[in-house]
Length: 567
Image 1 (cartoon, rainbow, N blue to C red):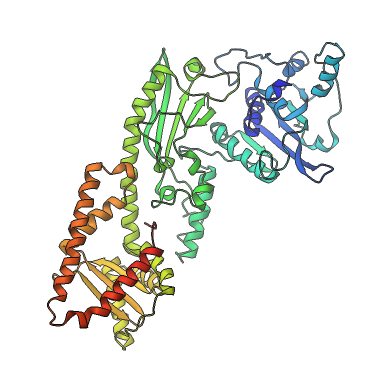
Image 2: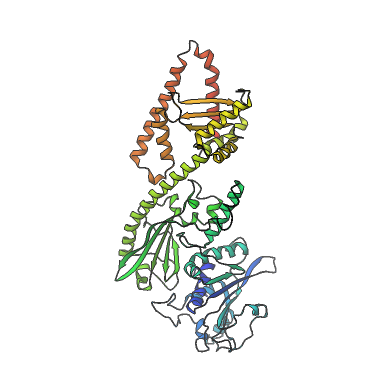
């Protein structure tokens, strides 16, 4: 009974059976999770079926399939499995009975063997010898006949499944299936990419590549749909968004490709990538709905270990990164591929879990990651900088804060300033602003004007002559603020701080951050001093500017309390 506690996740358990199918040269593998309801109304997976069209097993080999420790590939170094325990332990981890049907030619009958744990326990209690009966011609379950392959193949059924009740491994059967699909599509991505077909119930798996290099992956499908819908929502040209012109592949930037790591006369290969801009987008989007669909958060700090094209672990290896794992690491793909000759160095055991590099190999990988992760971090900062520039070109530098301020404005006193009564003058002011922000592109100008039409505040950094730092215009309830990028305050305080804010924590040195903070304090202090000096140019500043000071302080406190952590 202790063999039932091997610690397999359901996906890992099913992966052991898929390994056997692949070793049998199967091209099509079907998994079916059958759901039922117990007498108390609780749903659970009661039966799991795995069907392949591989070479099958003859009557001389079939009984040994259920024998723990037997494998026709025992200790081979050119196969996925070598211990002969995985598929058996995996089955017992979830079910109390295993049935196997197999044949090696289409003109032969399906041979059947089984192991029933309850029967075995009963036999043992009676002092009888527990063993596997010789193959028989047990009929295939009628409701599953349609699943049988036409030629050779193997069918494995786990029944008396008693560890997959609703809420135990997942909230419900649907969530459990999704988790299985997700894990298997990553574990067997190289086979799926090569043309092997794996189905979970009626879903054909697409490869999930944590490196974002393969084409036709789950991520490509999600991103194509996401950006296609965004294009339509933004009113982009239908021809530009047509299937033949639509972008359907989103490859990562390669930092290191199959870099050789020599150890004990064998070679492991390290690949490191930085995810594409369509995935990275701007900072603080690594955990939104799109990121979750793409499985980005779970990649943070993880390394994929691939043995003979089969992933055997996807995990965080303690202290193998040159520094503490950071949120931006979720955008870095890392794969270490190796052959069975290096099993000892990776700690490969009879159960394909807990694999990680040891000793000299670990040191070599860590030294390479020190260089590559630093490079990936630099390129990520560059990418975020380019994205920010593009966003500013189309929306303006201050858009996130301005949009957040719109919600805060609902509870503030409403503006009384009217501005020019002539609508033509107001339109000209807005169009001049649009031209200052996005340039001469008429379409971009229209998009910009549409984006600001409902905003109570509009603030933009633009270039205009003179030593005035801020210009404010009031247009029927809308406040348009322009900051002068030529002004020394903008160049020496605003721009450096904005540049640092766009980078990741690891991309800013301590000295740089301290210098910027000190200059910011200086500049803010001088800003207040300059305001005080400006008031002093009036003979009666308290009477003229008293209300201004009160409103300014009041609105500043209110806005700062409601708008934060959005850039």
